[in-house]
Structures are given as structure tokens and as C-alpha cells.
Image 1 (spheres, rainbow, N blue to C red):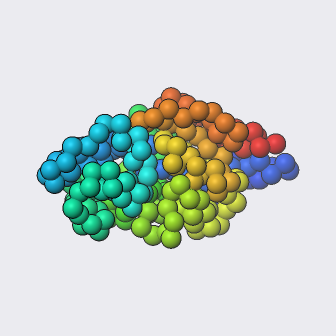
Image 2 (cartoon, rainbow, N blue to C red):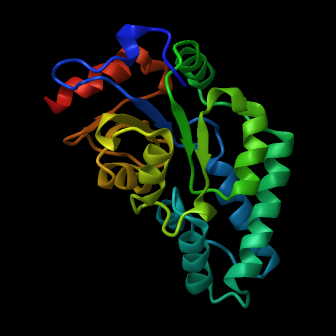
Length: 233
């Protein structure tokens, strides 16, 4: 996209302009982190296993290969990773089909970014089939591109998804603001060299260099995101 607001899209002499915003999906824009755990509990119960609630913090925010693999190993369930992935995706699709809520501030933030023609990418560890379903509620018009977890060689916590998004938008990762809700996603964004806003959903996240922690997306707007670039100077 080409910005219609020069003050937003123009690089300053110090090189501090915000070039793009990269957004996580589950737990960041849509209130679905709990859905995944609920589905995992239900699926494993059908296999005769009870999940320990402490495992929730281990699997949250991670790619399905990691979270599902961990749960298979932890429970000793007689199921393959491929078989479990199908069951989890099916269960999750049923959930979002009946009850999908946006996180507070998400709709307003997306509308603001779109109104100012800010290049925006949805970057998720969820599979493409899930992203496409959620996009119907978020509004595809808000995103210049989307990156799914099953479309990169290595998904979060590796930097590949965010590097792919920056490359697809033709921008410098260091000039991208990433909004994430889990430590896994934060690690991926920071490894890619992005400036990160953490909005913790399930487990606490501490502030750090190149990382700002807020309580809700209601605290995040375009002015806030542009201001993050000055932290680098």
C-alpha cells in the first residue's frame, strides 16, 4: 500500500519511521488462546487422558508441532502428530464458528491502521485453514498479507514468520512494530529484529530492551506504535 498520510509513512532523517505493523492472531486480536486449550483437553479426554493444567503455559503460543508433540509425549497417548493435528484443527474450527470474540481494542486498532494505509500483516502459528476462517471476522481488507504457521519452514519461536512478513511487505524488520501476546511470539519477533509490543494473554511477560508491555490493545494506537521507533535511537 502507498501511504496517504506523509507524516506516517515517511522515513525521517534519523531513519525512525514506522514502516509496517505485524500482528499475531490468537490471543492478540481474537480471544482464542483458551479455545486451543479447551480443544486439547477435550481431544485428549476422548483418548482417555487428562491434561495437567500446568501444561497450558508450556503449549500456549507455540506451533502445533511443538504443543501437540509435547502433549503426546507427556500423556503417552496412542496417536500420531498428524492425526492429532487434524483433530485439534477440526475442534478449533468448530469453536470459532460458534463464538469468536475480538480482543478489546482490536477492531479500533485495525481500523486506524487501515485508514492511514499502514502496511499490516497477520503473522500466526496457526495453520492456513484456521487463519482464513478467522479472517472472515477480522476483515481481510485490514491486512496487506498473512503468514500461516504451516507456510514457513520454521514457525515461532523462530524468526522466520516475521522475516517472511517483512520481506513480503518489502520493509526493514527493524522498522516493524510487532504485537504479540505470548513469550513464544515475542521471542520470534525479537529474533527477527523487530520492535515488540507484548499484550500478555495467559502468562506474564516482562519488559525488556526493544519490548514494551501493555495491559490491553486499548493502550495501543498508531501514535504509540510510531513512538516505539524512537526507542531504537
